[in-house]
Length: 209
Image: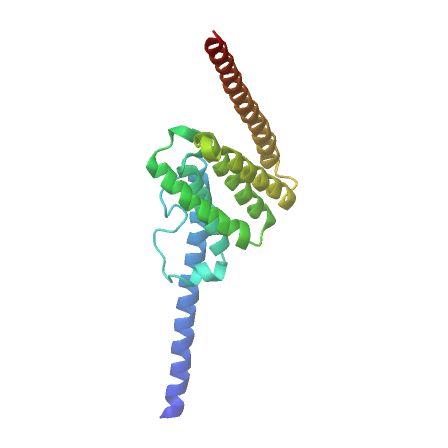
């Protein structure tokens, strides 16, 4: 009896394995299509948090691990947070934008430090440089420090990926802005100093009279 059941059991297991592999293959195809569609939508607008995820998965979790796309998704989600934070709006950003910027900073830092793709690391470092620059333009009390952090991130992006032209352009921009801000600060300090000297001279003459 057992000898008769054994072939049936093997056949049943083989059938289950075939069904599982078929479902897994469909999930893999759905992930690939979803990533491609999500990238096209992201080029137009940041989109929802699950922009790149398939709407339905037949074997949840397994296909994602099989494709080894956690780093790919992490990079995309960090870029999404970056765009949602509206870094180029600078002083016009809302509290919600600033909260999103904090999340973007954490996500981008994770990519910069943990991703094994130098190009993605460079892109993350460049985005961090932009976030620092945006903060510098909206917070004059920390401008000098934030400009230095921004320069450091753009330099790191260029070291990681010498072909990253955006980082090079951003570095040139931030250096010009830092110089302009420094010149303005020096001019304001000079004006205050001149006013103080003039006031002191007037006071001296008055007391002498």
